[in-house]
Amino acid sequence: MTSRASLKQGFSLARRTRSVVWILLLVNLGVAALAALPIYHGILNFTGHSLIGQELACGLMVDWLTDFSFNNPGLLDRFAQFILMVGLVSVLVNSILAGGVLSRFRPNDDRYATGGFFHETGRYTWRMIRLMVIGLVCYWIVFRLLNQSLGGFIERHTRDWLDDRPVFYVRFGWGILVAMGIGFVNLVMDFARVKLVMEDGGSAAEAFLASLGFALGRLRRTITVWAIPSLCGLALLVIYRLLIPWSFINATAPEASWSHIQEPLMLALLFIAQQVVMFGRYWFRVATWASEWSYYSGSR
Image (tube, rainbow, N blue to C red; front, side):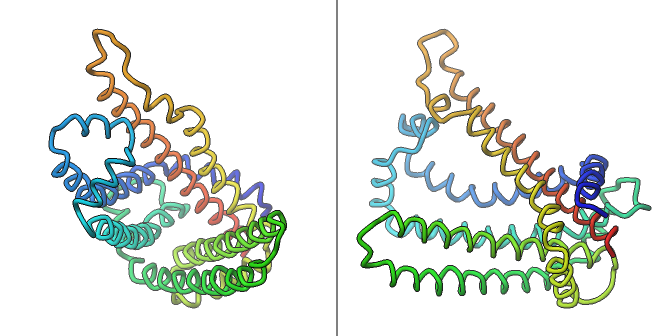
């Protein structure tokens, strides 16, 4: 199967299974709320219901953040550690949910049922967790070899260069190489998840090694099938940034009879717009899995 046919079939599968996108969105929204809740309470306890709280709704103030850090020593570090922990939980949750999403692409699974989705999710949970651990090890290897070792080598050899332009080009190329390494691991992990669910057998290590050989043997087409839907998801962020600039969000409310409701209304509209963007990104994530499913199924 060609990459174009795989993308076409994958987008069609994503349209038919868009109900799973709602599950991904709602679950990740709950995880994000869990991460934001202690930060919200910390800021609320410090500001109370003062006017500074209304100003913070329009944008983060550097002077206030400095004052907050000074009066709450170590609190920002604890917030950062908590966000890191929630980020790891998010990786775990999305890895587990991938089994339920991929099982929806089976030809004989035309009807949607929430109970069936979570049943399939539980069926592949432990294999998805083991595969996630393998992927985290591979990401660590990429960062260790490319980001730290190669980065340190470049740092040492460009330290005494007098011209900044070649230093910039070398570091820019280094950054692209790191991004390519991370992207390739992500690609292999996606096809390993597809193999686990489609063939419903074998171990996580076997699926990873088989998908690694599959991706290397069909590198150009596998990258195309993985990259196009993924880039569409990133394009949504660019469109959102262009349509809703921060200067418009932080604009001062005009003197009018409805000015007292403008800030809550703007926050509500901003929240809705952000969730629409997140829904679109999760839809393209499902479309990526569906395209990879179609290509792997047609190329076996």
